[in-house]
Image 1 (cartoon, rainbow, N blue to C red):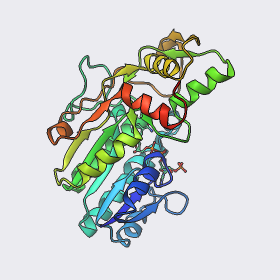
Image 2: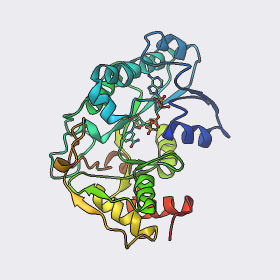
Image 3: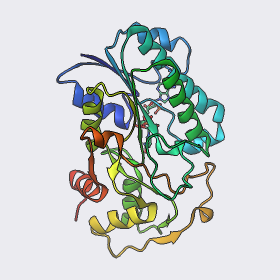
Image 4: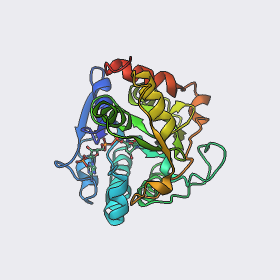
Length: 281
Ligand SMILES: NC(=O)c1ccc[n+]([C@@H]2O[C@H](COP(=O)([O-])OP(=O)(O)OC[C@H]3O[C@@H](n4cnc5c(N)ncnc54)[C@H](OP(=O)(O)O)[C@@H]3O)[C@@H](O)[C@H]2O)c1
């Protein structure tokens, strides 16, 4: 199958391309060669005649989106429109990644796939508009919301916490931002499985369970042999950011679980991540 992956240089795109390329013909696109926010992107993507598109490209800088909401909409909403239009033109299904930040985080229970979104920051709003455009234009879609991606290499939340511990820098982490970590190595096979089911719709795929930022930092430090390093618990109010953070945007995997697609508990995934990075104590 000819699979087109957008955002192929990013955390998810690069891993999906590596996992799919032995078996499939994979074409990857990214900035600066192709800017999805340009209207001409739809024609350029359609000309590649993919049979399946996995859309990982996005402007993921949440605080950047808060400073420049117009750019966020162009990249994340209209960029997604151009991808969906190309899919429609060539008859290819689309798997597009979205975020827990489409929800306001004020609900006590975890969010189910069809709970009403109510984004409270420009990143979440731009992703939610992207979702709506996909639903308007293309029935053959999988919209997959994820949260707190943990990918090997690069610099994610756990890498940054452990680096500060090694430097002896003070650690202050928020207790009232709660969500679900998603380990990229677990997500990749789940996405590939889902994309081949033909069961189009909206999905939540994260590791099972939820945790606060503080709890995740504490867990990673303990598992990496830094149990002696203190982490000061603070609240979001003590950590001002340009973007408003949804406090409890916990995703429940109901729809994919019905297809037998479930990711292991986040604690097992974080331990596996640390082991694979050579960081487990
Ligand atoms: N990372 C998370 O914790 C997280 C959480 C929830 C949902 N998600 C969603 O999951 C998906 C993948 O995230 P990720 O962490 O793999 O993202 P990532 O590492 O930031 O990669 C995204 C890629 O898309 C590219 N891109 C940005 N704007 C573009 C444009 N206008 N045209 C073409 N390419 C563009 C980026 O290029 P530049 O680097 O040059 O900007 C980057 O290579 C995204 O849809 C994101 O919203 C991520």
